[in-house]
Length: 109
Image (tube, rainbow, N blue to C red; front, side, top):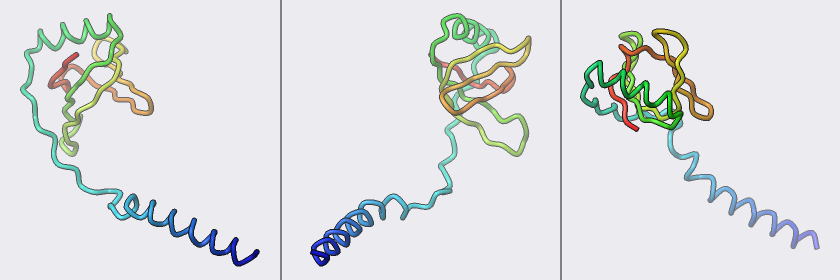
């Protein structure tokens, strides 16, 4: 009976390893391709779309420029809230972004 259990255990372990191997064979911190820059929308259009997105509380797509020269542009989706006169908060599940109108490059609903 122990032989049966051992062979079953070895078979299950082999199945588990073959299932997990492709997942862990890829590098975790692989360099992602750079974000394709979208056209910068006019300021009046960004303000109008922000106002509409905040009022409707629906998910929008944004392309944000980094706050410093060391960062890279990012594409994000989420719901926008206004914090004060100049700052906005975009959140979705476990990610949160703070940004200003000057960092906002593109917005789409």
